[in-house]
Length: 262
Ligand code: ADP
Ligand code: MG
Image (cartoon, rainbow, N blue to C red; front, side, top):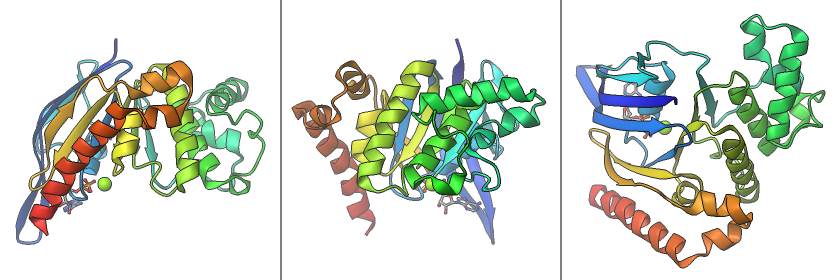
């Protein structure tokens, strides 16, 4: 069973005249099927944490283990989705999804079959032959999710992937992501600014605070994504009294802290 284990992770950036501590010791363990959402104001170290898990940034101290092996570089066991999709405009949708597999040396028919299966997972099975620029922003982001899933990673890393989408599209992509998560049972580490999005998607919420970045609050066993997957009605979930109560509680934590910094 894949496990991610973050132990006493600290990051210090070298800046002019000294160093900036972006992460105080962070500890976090994730298992198969965990959907962890990191929430918090700008600058509290969310992207720094994700970039360390992705292997883009080395820890200053501490370590991150994926299946007991230290993460020292990017790898096919982690799929990454950013706010900006970074698809290749000269490749069609299928070839974009299959690109990493092509670099890995897989033959065409095999990687096309995998790409088509991942496209079906995000509801784009009819779009494999289309050019990327023919697709809407929401569809392009779904292609990005399919691409991140193509190498069958243990862990999906998503840094504000819905940030550039309009509200309606965002809700649709959230629902598609939950279905893809349910079908693949991956670990997901997801960053957002939206409390509502965090509660709707995550099985666990970590609220981070700045200077230096750290985890200040943890909500385990958040039930709403599984409720949505059981009955398929997102509006019903988001209007439940318990959803609204938690939303206001988390908003109060974040706003109270921001007010203290203004
Ligand atoms: P978030 O994603 O929560 O907005 P970041 O992880 O991007 O936060 O940043 C955390 C802190 O580290 C901020 O104070 C930011 O200015 C600083 N920081 C981020 N990247 C760098 C860098 N490459 N060099 C120096 N400081 C950085
Ligand atoms: Mg960020």
